[in-house]
Length: 422
Image (cartoon, rainbow, N blue to C red; front, side, top):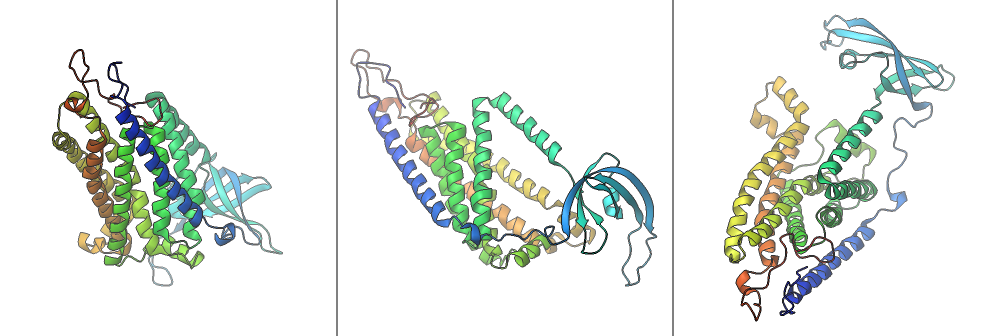
């Protein structure tokens, strides 16, 4: 919050303190409404489909093992199969692995074997033991727990080492995000709750917690929060309209079909619109915080600048950020759909033909909707930041002795109740 440096002007600080209190009340009200909505949408345990694990049936279980032997063999010649299909030539392998109750033997097809497997690898196996028959095993996947955990620890250590307390709070924000996703949003989707309200409520709670954790409790952070919430609302509205307009059913892959078969009551088209809100949160948060910070720093550098000048200068930064962020969205979604793009290219299908398929169409619409929400959030956040930024030097009260304006708030933003002020 703003602190006056002159004891002769006791009224210099209270306006910023009053603003901080008012904004604090508004944010608490928004948080209260979001939490109440989350409680209302929170699914009961018996509403969430359970016991859908295909490896939990009678006689079927999973087992961990360590590969002890790999014996390659040529599984086929690449000729035409009995049903007229073309078989893929390549080496397969007989594999042995040690498991808790002895040795497991299984075969790998060409695609699995060529992906790479050797003695010492940790694997997951499907253990089949029908009643009255001997145990058999099938390959399920590799065990990736240790490398994934190690990468996560390296990431966390580097973030904390470079960003220090802010990095630690950012890591805590990731934990909050994962909790909201796994304990509220995903179960609510499976329980048949309307996906869009769930996505909006969950995203709102996540952003309130994450923004203040990572950037401190300040007027500057609050201006970024307001811009982010407007961006979430705009993305949700545009996402619903775009999903209906492009007739996206949400069923574009085998996983989608498997999900609708497992949970018949789920609304996949609604989930498509909901995921448009969730997918853009990271980049949306990035641009809103940047815009708020830009306005605050410009106020420090140009204390006499008018609001229109601040807005124009900040939007120059915003336009550059929009361009780079749009590329980020496009590259992220292109990377996630790379396998589909490669397969379509191998089939020699044209770009326009590929783009209209359900699976690629979902990614294109998701990218465009996220980008539109991002673009609209930049000027909105800038307006909030200019409105809430410290006042112009000419608007500050002057000291009776010098006639100079009382110093404005620090550049980091007016604090509601935190160590970082301004």
